[in-house]
Each structure stands twice: as structure tokens, then as C-alpha cells.
Image (cartoon, rainbow, N blue to C red; front, side, top):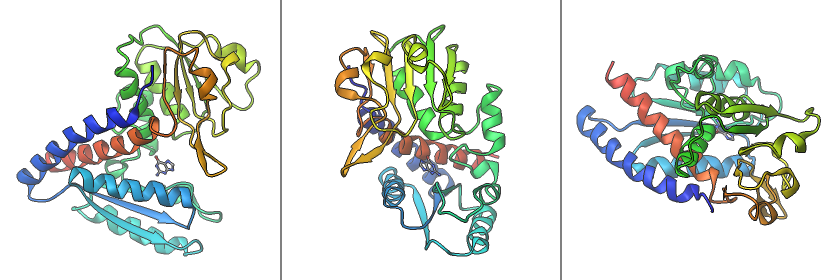
Length: 281
Ligand code: GUN
């Protein structure tokens, strides 16, 4: 069975739209997300366009800052600092990856934890590690919502995450652990990868290599979540060899239309949560 992020996403966005309207009625302003992009990477440009469009869809305000690659870091830092000090801005997102030559860490550090709607800050990631989540990284958060739609009880299940990035793999592993799964994190140096993945009841692929997960690596009846978005000959392809793995999986997410749309929806949810936390303080 397919888990369509698009459908889950549409439901969640409809609910968000109502909550955003309530927020505006109560506080006299719209929740506001500021998005910063540096450089011309086409994939990043598309993601940012979709984030801005998502804001409009649920009735939120968005601010869009676009800088050419090569813009001095200090200029972008000034924008982040101004947005950090602006009470009408609830969330700040710097689209990653930044072009070569930028210091990502020092730029992201300027985003206050309260406005870190990506959930990337050391505090937000640390709170998740301690099972006291505040802002949860959007892609893994979306995956958990999609898993919930299967109705499968995650407790005690073997979950394997392929990928150990701070933005997806690690928070994904922590969320699954917090949901009482037994979690294994695999990565590029993992030995006997197929042996480990073929024991997974839940397999999350976040590697960034097209069709990396093949049917022989998957247990019969597994839930397979494909976080990969790879461009091959102009087409979007996931990290999972969908045609063959689909035959073995009990549930699987397609690419496109799977995890991708959920990521932006969770970003919108995080922005509303940040706006409410500030307004209710
Ligand atoms: N680049 C790819 N995905 C993301 C994301 O979720 N947030 C940010 N800031 N950059 C990204």
C-alpha cells in the first residue's frame, strides 16, 4: 500500500488554515515565516518557491530574501539578525546547502531557538534527543505523521535508518527511539548493510543515492519510507528502487508525492507553533 504524503499533507494543511485564521483573529496579524536563499541551485529554488506557496495556501505571511552566490556573509548575517529582532517574524529558515565558501554553522547560530522552525539548532536537536521535543526537524516529523496513518503500532519494532545527517538521519532515529522502536542507524561506513536492513520492520532511506535500496535489502512486509529526492535525466527518483521494493513492502512512500510534500507542511506547522508560543508568552 502506498502512503501518499500529498494526501496526508492536504488534510494537515486544511487544519492549519483554520488555526492560522484563528491566530490572525486573536492576535491581529498573520504568522510569518522568513526564508533566505543564497545562490541559484535549481532544486533549492524550487523548494523555496514551494515553501512560500505553502505559506500562502494556509494564510501565513512569508518574507523571501534572495542573495546571489558570492554575496558577503556579513550581509546575510545582518538580515538574519534583523529578522531575529523583529517581533512580527515567527520563523527564520536559511535554505541549505549554502554555496561553497559560506560558514553555515555561524549563520545558523544567529537564528534564535524560538524562531528555528527547521528544528536544526543544537537546543532543538538536543531536546529531541532527551525526548522533550520542542521544534522537530520537518522531514523526520513528517515521516512520523505518515507512519501514524498506517495504523501500525511502532512499539518494539526494528527500525533501520540509512543516513546519519543532523537534519534527517539523526532526528529520524531519535523520533523512532522516542516511539519505542529498536533503532539502528546505518551510514556509508556500515558493514553488511543489507544484512541489517533486511531485518527492518521500518526502513527509512535518507542517503541521497538514486535507487540505492534494492528488493534484496528489504524484509517481506516492511514499511519503507523513501526520503531521497534525486534528479536523474530530469526525473525525480527516490533512494529506493520503487518498482521492485513495492512488491515486498506492506507500505511504501512514492517519489515524488511521498515525503516531500509533508516536509513543507510540517514547516508550516512549526511556524504556527512558534507564532503561538510567542503570542501566548
Ligand atoms: N534543504 C533541503 N531540505 C531542507 C530543509 O528542510 N530545510 C532547510 N533549511 N534547507 C533544506
